[in-house]
Each structure stands twice: as C-alpha cells, then as structure tokens.
Image (cartoon, rainbow, N blue to C red; front, top):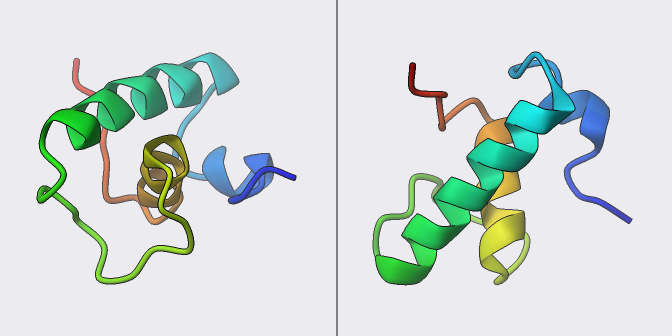
Length: 64
C-alpha cells in the first residue's frame, strides 16, 4: 500500500505525473545527499517513500 495515499499527494500537486517526477528527482537527491532531510521524522527508510512524505507535507515544490 502506498504511503502517503495518492489523494494526500494530489492536495499539493496537480497531476500524478508531476508527483512521480518530483518524487524521482527528490529520491535521487536524497541518495546522493542523505543528510539533506527536510522532515524531523520519517515513517520509512526508503528514499522514494521519504520523497513522497516530503511532497505530502508540502516541503518539496516543483521547479518551473
């Protein structure tokens, strides 16, 4: 089961495609720089899930 749920992610991002793109970019950044965490506490250790948690908390924004 996906955490956070897609409806939580879509509150902050307009499309599923954009959620996936943002999560992939953020996950790659977290793999390269593991100390660049923006939340105090995460529910998982996996980088993709951490990126999704950050998107759900509106801590990661899309770049234009």
